[in-house]
Length: 423
Image: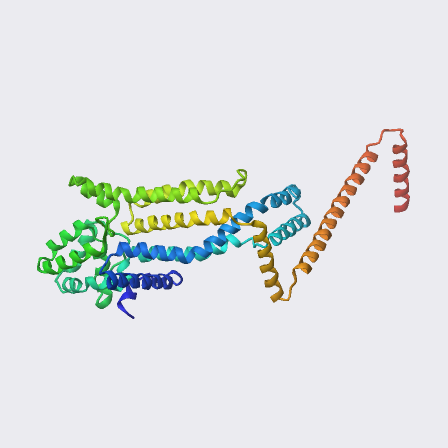
C-alpha cells in the first residue's frame, strides 16, 4: 500500500470517490506548476471546483427542466388530489395513483426525476469535503513537501509528547493519531498534524525542535507559497486567524478572515435567489424550499468560522460556479418551448418502452381501462354501503314503531311467525 493511501478516508463508498477526486486535484496542482510555475492549493481547489460543476452541468440542466415541467403539470396533479381528497379506501387510492401516473406519462417525466441528480451529486460533494479536509492524504505533491521535516521529527527523542502538546495547545481536532505507530503510518500521522497547525503553531514547532530550524524554515517557506490564499493559511480556521491577529492588533488579517464566512453567506444567498421558485405558495414542498433557502446560507456563514479556510474557499467557489451556471440556465429555460420538450420526452419514453416490448398506446389504453374499472368498483362499494345504511335505518324505524300503528302490528305478526318457526 502506498503512503498516500494510509491517511486517506477509508469509507467503502466515499473513500474510492475521494481518492479519485484527490488524484484529479494532484494533476491540477502538478499541471499548474509545470505550465506556470505556480504551486497553490487554494487555486487548485478553485479549479477543481469549477471542473466538478462543469461535469455536473448536464445533470443540473436536466433537473431544472424537470422542475419547470413539474410547475406546469402541478395544477393537474392537484386536481386529481382534490378529486380523491376525502376518499381513503384502497380502490380510491389506487385510482388516484393511476391517474397521477398518467399525468407523468403525459409529460414524459418520471416521479423520481429530481432525485436521481441529487443521488449522483451528494457522494461527489461529500467526498470533496474529505479531500479538502486533509489535502496531503490525497495530493502527493503536497505530501512530499513534509518528508524531510517528518523524518527529522520522528528521529528526535520524545517527539511523541511534543507533538501531542502541539495538538492540545493549538486545538488540532478531528484526527485519530497514534504517535506510537511506526513506519509510513507514523509519518502520515505527523503530516496530518503539521498540515493542520496554524501559523503560530509553526513558531512553537521551532521551540520544540531547535535542531530542525533549517528544515522547519524551508518547509514553512514552501507552505507559505502553496498553502496560502489571500494571505490566509487554508489550514487555519477563520476564527483562529481572527482571535490571534486581533490580539496582535493586525486588523487586516482579521478583516480578511471575516470575509470568508461573509462571502460564503453572500454567494449562497445570491445562488438561492437565482434558483427557480415555485409559484404555488400553498404547496408544502415550496414552503420547505423557502425555509431551506433561508437556513442554508446562515448555516454556511456560522460553520465557516470553525472549518479550515480551504473549505470556505470551496463553498464560495462552488456558489459562484452555481450562480454563473444558473444565469445561463435561466436564460435557456426562459426560451424553452415546454410543449416541444413534452413531445421529446414522450418520444424518449416511447422508445424506452418499445425496447422493453411495451408500447405507449397500449399502456395508456390499459391504464384508462384499469382506472375506469377501479372507479366502478369504488362506486359499487359506495352504493352497497349506502344501501346497507338505508336498511339499518329502516329496521331501526320498524323496531321503534308507535304502538297501534301499522308498523307495530307488522312487528307483532313477524314476532308471532318467528316464535312458531322455532317450535
